[in-house]
Image 1 (tube, one colour):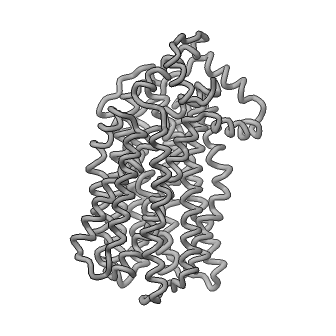
Image 2: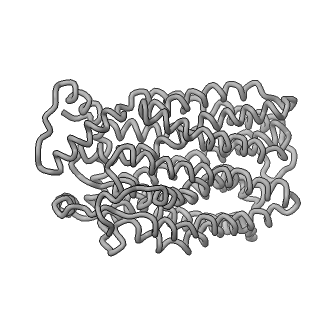
Image 3: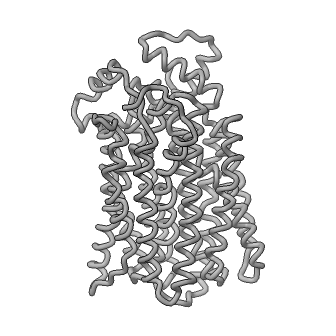
Length: 482
């Protein structure tokens, strides 16, 4: 492995950030188009389409935390995390491409089983590469600003990938191949499968992992030596950390709102607004502003904290959702595009900040539970992301079924159209409001992070960090423990 405290320059920022071309784009395509593909192209019922995603997550309940533990324990000449980047290049391509091949078997059950298998394969490969990737900043640097730069680079590529994922697939399916959407989705799988697979070569070559002191390795090995099942149960102790509880809450609430918006957007524009041809423009406007506003939100987070930046963005999303209430099929296209752009302005920190907080949550967990397990923390987060998306899409499928949506039909009933409107507009509001409250309570800021790092470094050295009563109260808010 590389030397400790290696300098993080532009090259390493770009190399690390490129990994989230996969993370930022693949799930957006799935969120926005997979349900539509399964119902309107493949012909699955909305219930079975939702079950494809929901049932596939039962495996993730095992694979994500397990991968975190595996990566924490991996020892190779390429490090604990980076070895998985090389191993996953070909599987990343194949598993994504298989999702978008149109296969219609004689029975709905056979069709369901094929897409269930394909989705499980995709989720497994995603876990193998993204869990080690998410924990890598903790290995590369212990500095708040350097970690923020790494997270910022990741989010920049994530948003860029989201922009590509939000425009090109929709253009292929809704415009270029509107008379043959199966061919459009086939090309989506082929093109984006390559886009997501090849950058891992650069990520591997341009990143590194700091050497872990032998004392810390032995300490962690001793604490996790009770067997895999006991280590799996130990993940519950993550919730003992107050910062982690608030962080995971913000993450789940924000991404639930995002998944509702993403899944219902294509239906809202196509059936309620009645202009499916502008779907790509609407989503593109949202993603462009999401990308362009990211540097502003990173600057804000470096000054007042990532939680405060999240709260500002969530407040914007809440207000813009109220604007969408006023839209109708007669609304000017320009107004719809402006509303979409403002939505992207608010979503930017809601999407970016929870992942940017991940390294500091790992530190807070170590300070609380005295275990270094960045991979396990990342595994829990990857698991939660996929479980939330699965549950949201499953419920969305049930709601479509409940409002009388007819899969594959060019015309929908008046009740189904109004139901789509209510789901899109009102579904995210409660989640965004609760996420804002948790973000305000989140205690880690640049100032308290510095205090946490000093305390943690003293603990790693077997020493006691002496601080005044005010600092003790700040640490109590971070850990939740005296």
